[in-house]
Image 1 (tube, one colour):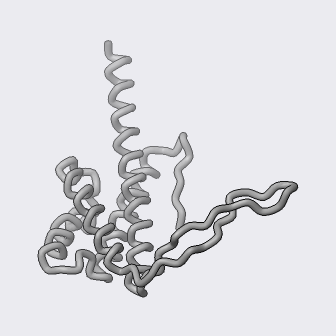
Image 2: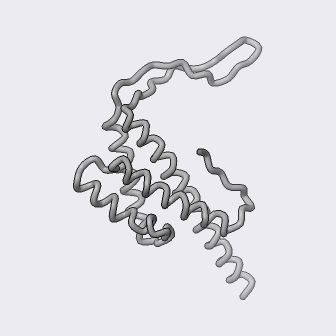
Image 3: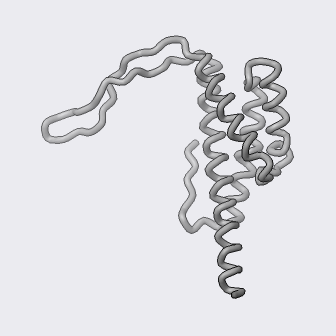
Length: 147
C-alpha cells in the first residue's frame, strides 16, 4: 500500500490517516515481535502504546519514534540471508535498455514481514508530519490575521 496525500488534502483526512496508520503499525509490529530481544521489545511496546490508543500526535513521542526507526532497521538487517546482484533498468531509449547492477538483500520470511512493517511506519511518519505541518500552518495564519 502506497499512501500519498494531495497538497490540498483536508487536515481531518491527514489526521485520520495518521491515526489509522499508527494503529496498523502497532498491530503489525506486535505481530512480528519487533525488537528481537526483550529489552527492545519492551521499549517498542511502550513507545507504541499511544498509537494503539489512537493518539499519534504527542510531541513527547518524537525521540521515541526516531529510536524506533533505528530498532526496526537493525532488526531488518539481522534478517538478511544473502545478497544477490541484480540488473535494474534505469531507462529505455532508442539504443535499448540501460541500467545498473545493484546488490539486493534477500530476506528471511520475517525480514519480508519487517519490510512491510517499515513501509507502514514510513507512511505513518509521513501522515503524522503532514498533519503537524498543516496545524502549524493554520496557527501561523491565525497569528498573521490577528496582527
